Each structure stands twice: as C-alpha cells, then as structure tokens.
Image (cartoon, rainbow, N blue to C red; front, top):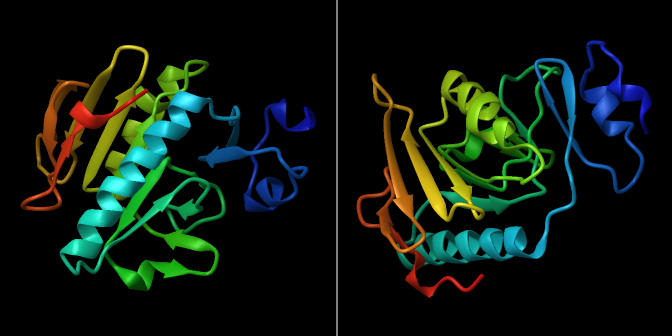
Length: 183
C-alpha cells in the first residue's frame, strides 16, 4: 500500500487498515514502513527474549518481556504506535489485550540496515521524551550496543561490543553476556 507515503497526518486507524502482512510504525502522525526482519535480527530478538525472560522467571520478578510484534502506545494518543524489538514492562496496569499503554521500562531495538537513523535518532528522542527508563540500540553490522539510561537527568550513555557482559540498569543483578551469542 503506497498511498500512505504521501505527506499527511495519520492515526491508529491507518495502521489498523494496513493490508495483512504489512507492518509500520506511527510516530507523531507519520507512518514509517518496517522491513521484514532478517535471520540475524531474529536471532538477536530470541537471545534477548530468552535471557531477560529467564531472569524474570528465575527471580520471580513482576516484569514481563514482549518481543515484536507487540504494540506500544507511548503517548496514549492515536498518533504514535511503535513495535520495539523487545519491550520490558514492569507496571501491569499498562497492559491490556491490545498491548502496552504508556512507556515500557526497558526497550531494545535492533538496528535495521535500511534505516539506522530511525533507531539512533528518531526513536531515541521519542523514548527519552515518553518516559522509557532504559533504551538499548543493538547494531549487528558494527557489533555494538549503545545503552542509554534515560531516567538519569543527563542521560548517561555507554557503548559496548558484542564481546562484553553488560549490566542492565533496571535490574540490580541482570547481566547480558554476549559471549554465548551465535550470529
């Protein structure tokens, strides 16, 4: 469906009207097409879902991890709808059968080769302004992870390689060890 590529203000109604199989995100009334994920992308999504999910289960945590596709309505309006690759939500009142209403506590995005600026700039600003506590940008091409601690006043940023063991900010004792990652 190419009709939505024209300049206009779009809403959730337009997202829900997309043809089956076509995915897009809606940010401030603009639609951004989503390319189908490749194998490396899916391996990374599975890796994070598995690591975080196991940690939550083993520690009897109250948070939940949701891999994409999972609807996040950040601003509680009908002009912004995103599908982060990984969303960790600790407030169950934000969840209903449609998805998450409000900011997840932790979001991980795996950079799409076709549009890296979307994750590095547009979504960073969106998540920072929406109340997301922690945002990870995982770039398989450079094998780097940028971690933003958005709840801090100066929003601290740290950069790691895929050879690192990274401590999460929203948990006291969860470390993501990339050593076992097979891409």
